[in-house]
Length: 156
Image 1 (cartoon, rainbow, N blue to C red):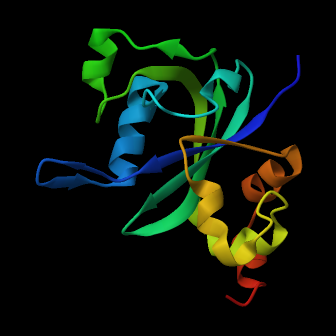
Image 2: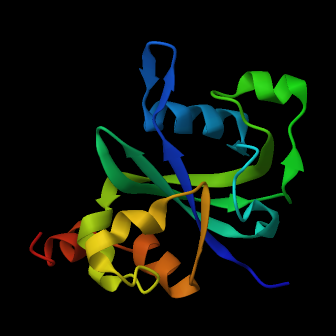
Image 3: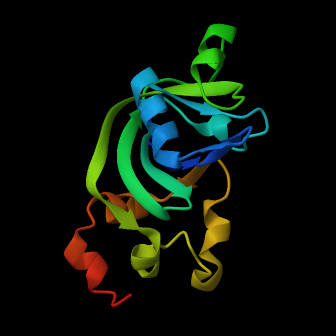
């Protein structure tokens, strides 16, 4: 079975008058050991057990790669009980495990020049829209193995 590589996107959410930060939502997902998706999320049916993912957090505090995880189930519909555990209004999920948060966030902008899946570097934000983005294995390793020295070498 082939391992696919993904970017799982977590963004800040407005709930009433409160804005929950992406990292707060991420901590909720780590604690509950599953990654939730809305009903209209594209591509989630392609996620599978054994796939690996980079975690991308987007919000007012930045747009950064913040960790890695393993997907340990196929996508499934969330039960009412599990929906209540989550922030927002998710419909589907995959189980996750082996979450390793990076000691420092890795800036998307400083790694862009090395990422093959981002063809238009000027409009890179379009490549990070959605809940789950399939990426080449090489790009997964570039992000997962990036060091602060590699990031600062871009001069940005």
